[in-house]
Structure formats: C-alpha cells, structure tokens
Length: 319
Image (cartoon, rainbow, N blue to C red; front, side):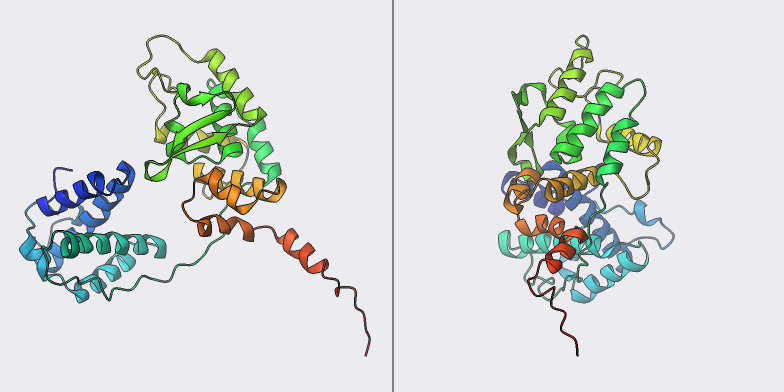
C-alpha cells in the first residue's frame, strides 16, 4: 500500500489499531477507496486524459482536494462503477459503505472536513438472492470423485467444507494445535474466534490425512493443510483444487465455488438436521441472524408441506 495519500493511510491505520478490523477487511477498504480516489482525480482533470484508469497515481492527493468532494461527485462515481465497471448492486453498496466510513472518520473523528458529503448518499436497494448450493446427491457425487496425487488431503478439505461450513480463509488458516478431540478453533471474520464441532466423518478425514501429511522440512509447522512444496496451502490453491474436483464430478464450476460449499453445509444442516436458526448462526459465525435467515427460505418441499398441513386444507365444499 505504498501508492496512497497519507490521509488514506491514516484512515486504514485507524481501522486496524482502533476499530480492530481484520486484514482482509482493511484490504477491501483500501481497494474500494483507491478506486474512488482514482475516479476523483480523473473527474477533476488532475491526470492526463489518455492514462489508463488503473495506472492513476493517488499518492499526491491531499486533504484540500478531498474537501472539494460533494454529493454530485459521489453520484457520478456510483454511475461510473455501475456502467463502466459493471459492478453489481451488492458491490456498489459495499463501495458506498467504504466511502461513508471514510468521510465519517474525516468529519467526526479527526475533523479534517467541515461537511460530510455522504449524509444524503443513498444505498442501492439490495436484492435478496437465494444462495447456490449442492444437493445431497451432488455432494455425495463430489465426494466420490475426489482423485489424484493429493486425494487424501483434498478429501479432508472438502469434508470440512461440506460438514462444518467454514469460510475459505478459515480453512486455510487451520492450525494442528487448534484441533482438540472433536473441536476445532478458527479465527473468523473480524478476527473473532469461534469453536467448530467436528462430526465423525470430518474427524476421520482429518486423521487419515495426518497419517500421510509430511513431517520434515515444513515451512509452517502449525499449518494443517500443506502444499506440494510443504507451505501452508494458499487460498488460490484451495479454490483451484475445489474447482478441479467439482469438474471431475460433472458439476457446474461456473456457478459453484468454495463459498458455495459453505452454503451447502448450511443448507444440508437446515434441511436434513432440523438445526435451529440460532444454532446455525453460531456454527457459521454470522454476526447477525438476518444473514443466516437466507437458509430458511430454500426448501420448497417444506413450504409445500406446511401449506398442506393446514387443517383447512382438506375442505372440499362444493358450490
């Protein structure tokens, strides 16, 4: 993050040291605000017209320029990321939230701007989409088609995804010393620690992998899942191996991903395990139950049976 003005650097430091945001969250703020400030430089004609957008240097932006930003600039920026960068509604909403936080810090916390231009900035209405997931049969098909040189390791990874509903970042960060009997401690979103309970199939998969996991010349000795070079397995590597096994199982790799395996775990628990919504919230590490509630709208069969169970459903009065 060497290409940023000091005012943005100070804001990111504030998020880290005062607000306690995770590294991934801070990175998202950085990317969002870098794009926004590049747009401002282009809109204010502070760069050559022929320069590529991603090559715009924002390190020379000072607070005097930021003080000039008004609501019209913000509307223009939202239009830009919508039409020129094809950002989804959810992505635009996230970018607006990043800008709001930035100006709230500048206006309320460090008092570097007299007016907060985001006060009347509206968030685009979000569409509530049902998450994509594998059915039980598709999940079994995926498990049956895990082959290759690292099939024992990959099987353990996919079983943890499908049984425990971990986030990708949580899975790659698993340390061996955090596995105690049938529990696993992970660091989730916002650096919050939570306990995951491992069922029989997950435990068996982990133990089978531990039997063949390398023990010598390991770069990160605590890491559970290792690469061919004996490094901690990276996020990109896990994404790649999951796509490979999905493809081998004949499943749609365009629509499915590691995050969809997390959705699958949640959906299977809700549909087949009669899991209470609050328990599911805790398992998934959601800060709000409203996030978890998307899984309560998935099962058409349950809805159909609920309507059929109405005691008036048998009424057949004829006219």
